[in-house]
Amino acid sequence: MSQTLKPATAAAKLGIYLPAAPEEFRTASLTRDELDELRDNPPAWLIELRRNGPFPRDVVAQKLGVSRSGLARAGVTEALTADEIGELLADPPDWLVRERETHQKVLKEEARLRQER
Image (cartoon, rainbow, N blue to C red):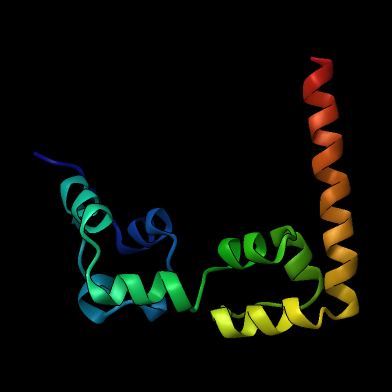
């Protein structure tokens, strides 16, 4: 018997925002084979979500170059679309500039610590 994944787990593995997925995806468990099939042959809805969002917080953070904590500090709690992310990147508010700098410092420090080991 194949292991099944809850919709939230499957959405996380696909990098999509679960509430934006079709109802049949949000309400059904998937097998690993079904998840692999979605990855290998994504349907139109999955292609659209991956391209334009809305995106889950971890993807938003990655696209903006900040940490998830940085999003929380800035009060960004909602999923963002590609257009909204593009607007933020085109004219970055102060919080985004600050959080990007902080995130880069953290990444550099983590890299330095890894090298020391």
